[in-house]
Length: 77
Image (cartoon, rainbow, N blue to C red; front, top):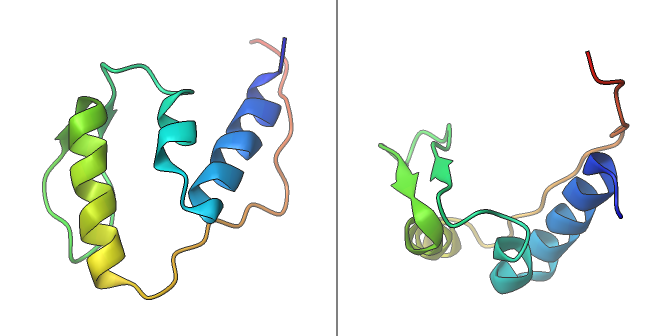
């Protein structure tokens, strides 16, 4: 089973490839997503809400990439 860091990085890679479906496979359909981006207001619920955010992002940015130089597992606290 993949750890949280590995799953997170796989999801980021899917976003960078433009493969929203691969990312959504890792996310519960009950997701409550609140992006912190000036051009976006409100929250997005479920996979359909995330798809709406994704469409808006594609219209707003020519290139959208996630970059996380240091992702690691932390011990359960």
